Length: 205
Image (cartoon, rainbow, N blue to C red; front, top):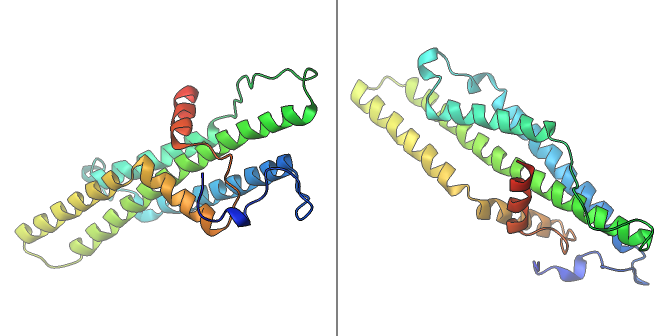
Protein backbone atom coordinates (compact mmCIF):
# COMPACT_ATOMS: atom_id res chain seq x y z
CA UNK A 1 0.00 0.00 0.00
CA UNK A 2 1.51 3.29 -1.09
CA UNK A 3 1.52 6.31 1.19
CA UNK A 4 3.77 8.61 -0.81
CA UNK A 5 6.86 7.89 1.27
CA UNK A 6 8.28 4.89 -0.58
CA UNK A 7 11.79 6.30 -0.61
CA UNK A 8 11.91 6.25 3.19
CA UNK A 9 10.67 2.68 3.64
CA UNK A 10 12.75 -0.34 4.45
CA UNK A 11 13.61 -2.27 1.28
CA UNK A 12 12.05 -5.65 0.72
CA UNK A 13 15.46 -7.19 0.24
CA UNK A 14 18.99 -6.26 1.37
CA UNK A 15 20.80 -3.57 -0.59
CA UNK A 16 24.24 -2.09 -0.39
CA UNK A 17 22.83 1.12 1.05
CA UNK A 18 20.73 -0.67 3.67
CA UNK A 19 21.89 -4.11 4.87
CA UNK A 20 18.61 -4.88 6.68
CA UNK A 21 17.15 -8.13 5.36
CA UNK A 22 13.51 -8.65 4.55
CA UNK A 23 12.97 -10.74 7.68
CA UNK A 24 14.76 -8.20 9.84
CA UNK A 25 12.44 -5.52 8.47
CA UNK A 26 9.46 -7.73 9.21
CA UNK A 27 10.65 -8.37 12.77
CA UNK A 28 11.08 -4.63 13.29
CA UNK A 29 7.58 -4.06 11.94
CA UNK A 30 6.19 -6.47 14.52
CA UNK A 31 7.88 -4.45 17.28
CA UNK A 32 6.50 -1.18 15.91
CA UNK A 33 2.95 -2.50 15.74
CA UNK A 34 3.07 -4.05 19.19
CA UNK A 35 4.48 -0.86 20.70
CA UNK A 36 1.51 1.00 19.21
CA UNK A 37 -0.83 -1.64 20.59
CA UNK A 38 0.58 -1.36 24.10
CA UNK A 39 0.32 2.44 24.00
CA UNK A 40 -3.32 2.22 22.92
CA UNK A 41 -4.09 -0.24 25.70
CA UNK A 42 -2.51 2.06 28.29
CA UNK A 43 -4.50 5.06 27.05
CA UNK A 44 -7.74 3.10 26.96
CA UNK A 45 -7.19 1.80 30.48
CA UNK A 46 -6.56 5.34 31.71
CA UNK A 47 -9.96 6.35 30.31
CA UNK A 48 -12.15 3.47 31.42
CA UNK A 49 -10.70 3.30 34.94
CA UNK A 50 -11.25 6.96 35.77
CA UNK A 51 -13.56 7.67 38.66
CA UNK A 52 -15.87 9.60 36.34
CA UNK A 53 -16.26 6.51 34.13
CA UNK A 54 -18.37 4.92 36.86
CA UNK A 55 -22.08 5.83 36.93
CA UNK A 56 -22.98 7.91 40.00
CA UNK A 57 -26.04 5.76 40.78
CA UNK A 58 -28.02 2.76 39.60
CA UNK A 59 -30.32 4.95 37.53
CA UNK A 60 -27.38 6.13 35.41
CA UNK A 61 -25.95 2.62 35.00
CA UNK A 62 -27.69 1.98 31.68
CA UNK A 63 -27.17 5.41 30.15
CA UNK A 64 -25.44 5.22 26.76
CA UNK A 65 -22.05 6.63 27.71
CA UNK A 66 -21.55 4.39 30.71
CA UNK A 67 -22.58 1.35 28.66
CA UNK A 68 -20.00 2.27 26.02
CA UNK A 69 -17.26 2.64 28.63
CA UNK A 70 -18.04 -0.75 30.16
CA UNK A 71 -18.00 -2.32 26.72
CA UNK A 72 -14.63 -0.75 25.94
CA UNK A 73 -13.18 -2.01 29.21
CA UNK A 74 -14.40 -5.55 28.54
CA UNK A 75 -13.19 -5.53 24.92
CA UNK A 76 -9.75 -4.20 25.87
CA UNK A 77 -9.39 -6.96 28.46
CA UNK A 78 -10.54 -9.57 25.96
CA UNK A 79 -7.80 -8.61 23.50
CA UNK A 80 -5.17 -9.02 26.19
CA UNK A 81 -6.60 -12.37 27.23
CA UNK A 82 -6.71 -13.80 23.70
CA UNK A 83 -3.77 -15.98 22.70
CA UNK A 84 -1.89 -15.81 19.42
CA UNK A 85 -3.10 -18.61 17.17
CA UNK A 86 -1.07 -18.66 13.94
CA UNK A 87 -3.05 -21.47 12.35
CA UNK A 88 -1.51 -23.41 9.48
CA UNK A 89 0.88 -21.25 7.46
CA UNK A 90 1.03 -23.95 4.79
CA UNK A 91 4.78 -24.57 4.91
CA UNK A 92 6.65 -27.64 6.06
CA UNK A 93 10.04 -26.99 7.70
CA UNK A 94 12.76 -28.91 5.87
CA UNK A 95 11.05 -28.80 2.50
CA UNK A 96 11.95 -25.15 1.91
CA UNK A 97 14.72 -22.83 3.18
CA UNK A 98 14.42 -21.77 6.80
CA UNK A 99 14.34 -18.12 5.80
CA UNK A 100 11.10 -18.74 3.90
CA UNK A 101 9.51 -20.40 6.92
CA UNK A 102 10.62 -17.44 9.03
CA UNK A 103 9.20 -15.04 6.44
CA UNK A 104 5.80 -16.74 6.47
CA UNK A 105 5.79 -16.87 10.26
CA UNK A 106 6.62 -13.16 10.57
CA UNK A 107 3.96 -12.28 8.02
CA UNK A 108 1.39 -14.17 10.07
CA UNK A 109 2.54 -12.39 13.25
CA UNK A 110 2.24 -9.04 11.44
CA UNK A 111 -1.33 -9.96 10.53
CA UNK A 112 -2.22 -10.85 14.11
CA UNK A 113 -0.45 -7.84 15.62
CA UNK A 114 -1.98 -5.45 13.08
CA UNK A 115 -5.44 -6.81 13.82
CA UNK A 116 -4.94 -6.36 17.57
CA UNK A 117 -3.74 -2.79 17.02
CA UNK A 118 -6.70 -2.07 14.76
CA UNK A 119 -9.16 -3.36 17.36
CA UNK A 120 -7.39 -1.52 20.19
CA UNK A 121 -7.49 1.77 18.30
CA UNK A 122 -11.19 1.38 17.64
CA UNK A 123 -11.82 0.68 21.32
CA UNK A 124 -9.72 3.68 22.34
CA UNK A 125 -11.70 6.02 20.08
CA UNK A 126 -14.99 4.73 21.47
CA UNK A 127 -13.74 5.11 25.04
CA UNK A 128 -12.72 8.69 24.29
CA UNK A 129 -16.21 9.42 23.01
CA UNK A 130 -17.66 7.89 26.15
CA UNK A 131 -15.53 10.03 28.46
CA UNK A 132 -16.41 13.19 26.54
CA UNK A 133 -20.08 12.29 27.02
CA UNK A 134 -19.53 11.96 30.77
CA UNK A 135 -17.69 15.26 31.01
CA UNK A 136 -20.31 17.14 29.00
CA UNK A 137 -23.08 15.74 31.21
CA UNK A 138 -21.17 16.83 34.29
CA UNK A 139 -20.86 20.35 32.90
CA UNK A 140 -24.60 20.54 32.27
CA UNK A 141 -25.43 19.11 35.69
CA UNK A 142 -23.23 21.70 37.39
CA UNK A 143 -25.25 24.54 35.88
CA UNK A 144 -28.42 25.90 37.41
CA UNK A 145 -30.64 25.28 34.40
CA UNK A 146 -34.41 25.02 34.26
CA UNK A 147 -35.48 21.35 34.08
CA UNK A 148 -36.66 21.63 30.48
CA UNK A 149 -33.43 23.22 29.26
CA UNK A 150 -31.36 20.72 31.22
CA UNK A 151 -33.22 17.79 29.66
CA UNK A 152 -32.76 19.32 26.22
CA UNK A 153 -29.03 19.77 26.79
CA UNK A 154 -28.66 16.16 27.96
CA UNK A 155 -30.51 14.89 24.89
CA UNK A 156 -28.15 16.89 22.71
CA UNK A 157 -25.17 15.29 24.46
CA UNK A 158 -26.65 11.84 23.86
CA UNK A 159 -27.11 12.68 20.18
CA UNK A 160 -23.51 13.87 19.97
CA UNK A 161 -22.29 10.58 21.44
CA UNK A 162 -24.29 8.58 18.92
CA UNK A 163 -22.86 10.68 16.09
CA UNK A 164 -19.29 10.26 17.33
CA UNK A 165 -19.72 6.51 17.60
CA UNK A 166 -21.22 6.27 14.12
CA UNK A 167 -18.18 8.14 12.77
CA UNK A 168 -15.82 5.50 14.18
CA UNK A 169 -15.99 3.15 11.22
CA UNK A 170 -13.56 0.41 10.24
CA UNK A 171 -12.40 2.60 7.36
CA UNK A 172 -11.78 5.65 9.54
CA UNK A 173 -9.84 3.57 12.07
CA UNK A 174 -7.52 2.05 9.48
CA UNK A 175 -7.02 5.45 7.86
CA UNK A 176 -5.95 6.85 11.24
CA UNK A 177 -3.39 4.09 11.62
CA UNK A 178 -2.08 4.35 8.08
CA UNK A 179 -1.68 8.11 8.46
CA UNK A 180 0.30 7.65 11.67
CA UNK A 181 2.48 4.97 10.04
CA UNK A 182 3.20 7.24 7.08
CA UNK A 183 4.06 10.13 9.37
CA UNK A 184 6.67 7.93 11.06
CA UNK A 185 7.93 6.61 7.69
CA UNK A 186 7.26 3.02 8.68
CA UNK A 187 7.60 0.17 6.22
CA UNK A 188 4.05 -1.04 5.62
CA UNK A 189 4.35 -2.94 2.34
CA UNK A 190 3.27 -6.21 3.97
CA UNK A 191 0.72 -4.81 6.42
CA UNK A 192 -2.62 -6.59 5.95
CA UNK A 193 -5.55 -4.93 4.26
CA UNK A 194 -8.64 -4.01 6.24
CA UNK A 195 -10.53 -6.88 4.63
CA UNK A 196 -7.92 -9.39 5.69
CA UNK A 197 -7.90 -8.10 9.27
CA UNK A 198 -11.68 -8.33 9.49
CA UNK A 199 -11.48 -11.90 8.16
CA UNK A 200 -8.82 -12.69 10.80
CA UNK A 201 -11.11 -11.31 13.53
CA UNK A 202 -13.98 -13.50 12.31
CA UNK A 203 -11.68 -16.51 12.28
CA UNK A 204 -10.61 -15.94 15.89
CA UNK A 205 -14.18 -15.71 17.21
